[in-house]
Length: 220
Image (cartoon, rainbow, N blue to C red; front, side):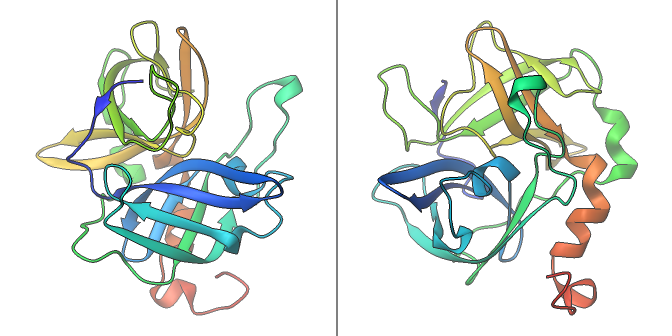
């Protein structure tokens, strides 16, 4: 839930073909050709082939550009155990066929800056999830206060994350630069939302960006 977001062009709408329909999530361009999302978006038992996914950029349909996914890399520690708690290490990287034209990436918050996340800090949540009218596929944003930085949970009593927001960005500006500080993992409507804390995954993210660390096929 929230209001339409026309600003964050780096946040895109992920659409993965599954048996009988589509798996819909959100992701953020954090480097050229590199999208950060939630691992559960691409490891669902219904998503047989993550490379069947596309990422659409633009506030809503008709989107400005739709880019195919060439590779999908969930965090190796990802555990989906919804019966016994929230998923662990719920982050993943998508490598795109090309970077969307004219879209500037929003960098991931580096580990050295993780201390900026304190209780009460207001973060901006961006995603393509359900609207109050029940539709999915419009980029929305809202601001929410952090409740517990260690688990990256935030107060959703006034606004909330919902289906389609998974993988979306929690954003924070530090000294004039906007960073992705969280990746939406789960939420309880009208109560609480939980994201993966991006700064804790710098080693994983740096392996998947490209360049020297991504020359090995085993890593990339």
